[in-house]
Length: 120
Ligand code: HEC
Figure 1 (cartoon, rainbow, N blue to C red):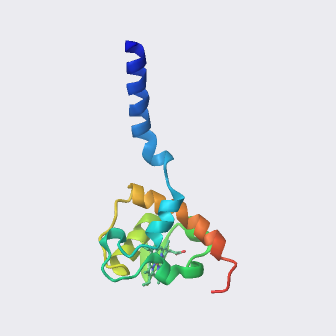
Figure 2: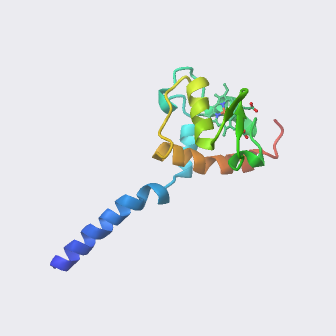
């Protein structure tokens, strides 16, 4: 009985520790992409406003070594997303390793793949 309790507690701890990396949620990423409230945005824009049909995205978007966003060199995809949140959504940057960022990053490839063949 005691052993079972300890085992249960241990696996719960394990799940809690690994949950964030295993649990990237593509569907939630889509909701965030279409939400004007992402990062407490105040401009009324969403990611979709400017990136509908994958506008400004390419198959290389997920793997570039450096990004140029509105003339500004930006080093990583997470920083690009925060740049767009701050400048375009007029919100606050979200945590680069946080759940929302993970979900957005998980959604982007689906979005790019689904839209890259459509007319812009
Ligand atoms: C007001 C319009 C606008 C909004 C809203 C916007 N972006 Fe952007 N985004 C841009 C522009 C412009 C670029 C850079 C295009 C360029 O300079 O080549 C860009 C670039 C990007 C890139 C890099 C693409 C590449 O291949 O270099 C990503 C990823 C991206 N945005 C994600 C997002 C996300 C996620 C959101 C929502 C938080 C968002 N954007 C909201 C305008 C916007």
